[in-house]
Length: 201
Length: 420
Image (cartoon, rainbow over all chains, first blue to last red; front, side, top):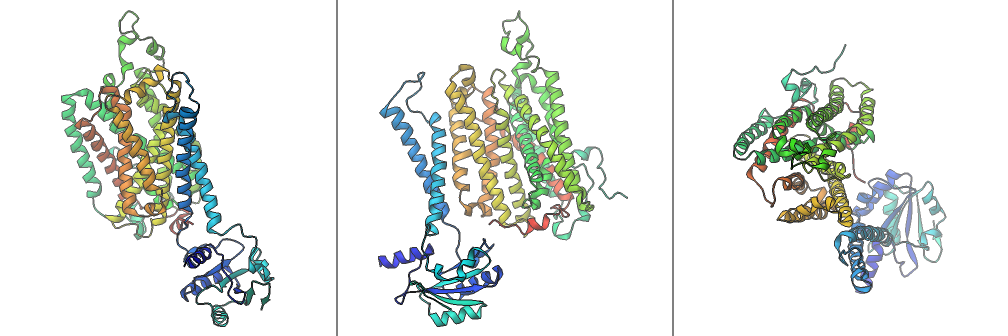
């Protein structure tokens, strides 16, 4: 139960488990960004959910095509902001009124007015931490090892090639059946990627 | 052969300087609806102003202060619209082209506002303490050394001359931005976008400086001993917020009641307008607080006196209300993406922020007159009466020209605009 949940969360971050035979999934190459976009749509309509796309640049509309929905980074940002606001309030109050009260021209030890800039700054700072940390977490980064790196062709993903990867952990995954589907939606080249370093064309 | 629209005749020039180009509008962009769209708000406005005259008879002071609040509300809103349009031209913004015509209709307001400002001249003695002659007479017990020192600047003839100058500048800049854009509808001259940009380029510093001084003259000098160097920015921040809210609201009204601009102004545009509303809510709070915090820290009586009065005798409730409902609540409501893309919520926020802008000015102006907080009915009738006439003018202009700048080179980019 907990394993299942963990697996789903990792899958949401783009980290998929290999199956019992060390198969990580199928990597299909498409000729251009448009073809990749339509392929992502088609794969989603076929009912796959554990798949990802790789291209050298962002493709407009890809999040819709993959059915990703709205980014959840905003929630992390908001949480970070609230944490920052609370931290700054505590910091200002505790240092100025509790730990080391100092009378400065008769002003109150703790007052909201002079604390607002600190509250504002820490809200922004922590919100930025939340946004960057949330973005990394949701993308499953940093991720130094990815079985896809075993594929020679995959190097082109940062140059001029467009890939769609369907993970073996998808309930619908079947090496032959899935390969047929990918071919029917226009894949140029398909290879089976294995976690132990063997990539079969 | 000139194809530019002709100049409008004398008095209607105030409402719209150019002859109607409605016939030249492509079908999708043609305004529908009849005279009621502008006649109704104008009639309501005139009626409310007529009722306000009862207030003048009852208590001239209350009337003039209410009138000044309502009038400044419209001046700041129109100026905010002028800045908003200038920013878009200068940055060659393409997303905003479909809402530009609403913005352009908003800014041709200065001649009318100038005329509507004339009644204030009869209330100078009530509104502006520095107009009292005895302040400057060394033998009088009322002699005021500080104001005597400011006399070279704060005196009625110079004040009126400055007002004429400000309105002349604003009218000139807004005329060029308005007229070039309308001309483009009938005459797709490729030089027009560059003319709009160059007008914006020299118009921006000129407008910025005149707006800062206008804020000192119109509002800050109601408390002539007090001064704040950030006051001009404060004046601007509320105005541009109100302007974006007005543009959002007019777009929503054209779509929901007029059935126009379907698929022209889309969710994507509303989301961007929502982002601007959110941004200027934060900007207003930032500026308002900057003004307050430095004076709180300094703790010098001649500087804190203005805020002290606004934190006592019930005005403290107004200050708290401003903090909560001009900042905290709109901030939280406009924060998520979803609310900015939901037109009913965005429209409610637009109306709310327009009201809060007036409340903000009320908080600036009325404590000068009243020792303890509160409203007078004439505060509302003056504000809504002037706003009715202003809104009538806006709808009149919109009804006479295409609803979007139909030959703008970036129109197609704007129509297909999507937030990424």
